[in-house]
Image 1 (cartoon, rainbow, N blue to C red):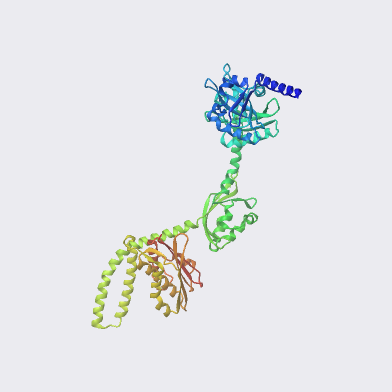
Image 2 (cartoon, rainbow, N blue to C red):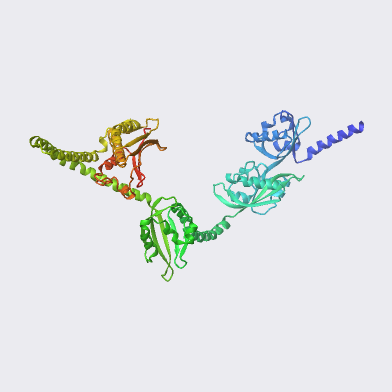
Length: 606
């Protein structure tokens, strides 16, 4: 027992001696975080003796900005984990002293044991100095900008070249996270750190860093590990080389190369991403050497077919335009020329195409290729037709008032005197003359409808279904007389619209009357209502009559043009005007022998 007691005492004396002579800072905290012991090196560093601070809470002396991450590390100790870190400790003179904690553990009785090394400043050189092991490792590199940071990314030291390059002094950075790291480059930093911690001796890569003034510079970064005397990684060092001049030189060369490459790709990039169809035809080869992808979107045919045989394009041209198209494309020409023609897509849709062909010459002035640019102008053509119809309506509207007033006054007089003459002479021709005069009066009323300005209409909210039902009731007898059945397919909702009820009735009467007259041997007329997703109601009148040719459909709505033998063309013209004033649209589709369908779109009440 005496030998055991002597050995224990000898161990205690040795531990006490070691704590006294070592340059490392030793501390012992109880379970409540109160200071139980600091060694002489710790006393000299913070200017307090052990009796002055014993039993005080350790966090009392830690800088308030460092307390949170200090507590985080103390919590890790409870899970038997420790990561070296830096915090600032308050000295007796009120200044703060930076400590790098390199080791800590919890004893079996719950006491916290910690070992730190000081980070001191040299006033003579104005730069941060670390402990001997770190200093030798860190400044053993070249004169490039260099700094050292702990495993959390907080700066431990930086050299003069670093301060000169980035504009921060070492005092401004030590103990803080790196501000030279752009937020979007954090992943590079984390990845490089992991590679070093997992065994890589050196990790080098090119990236970007930020100066104090906000300037972004290209750099080459080399990371390496810093170990303590026991070989444990306690920090990382970084060597940074400014690549601004090198990158600028490379950029000039790269820009020249890119410029040349872009010039070659420019035409292809443009033609691949525009709606116009760009084609390049080689005369010597007798085929197309380039056709832009937009061809498939407009024509709807496979590009490869046209590459194999250029004449395939003519198969798509509308029959009535084929001769004109062949003459345009196959006749040699020395200047640019343009043609509008129709094509039929693979879905059967007819489209208007405008093509401009320009000859391409070689250095000798010989035409070697033809460059053509085509575009789909179907919508433009439709707009032109609408404008023409609108202009005609406008002209007729302006003339209508004058013509109606000029004719109705003498017409009234003629009718009155004719009636008196009939009473006196009882001529058999009087009734015929009166009938024709009434027809003239009816035409004048239709003229006046065109002349009535939109602002004078008395608009009110009405159910389009109710309006249609009243019209069908009115037209019922005429349908029966012509052996025509009117079939309705109405939605359950009333479908409210803002309208002038009498005018809409006139439109629907015209449409149903036209449908009945288009079925000379009897048949069916369908009247439907449908709600569209765009906030419109669709009124559809369909018959199974004789139909109308495409040429005649294009002219419907023109004044004094009608597909009927005794028609004036004013009925549809008036209908177009009424629907236009109701902010709606009017569409007619038909096929000879297969009937006609008229669709009217009117905005629903929101």
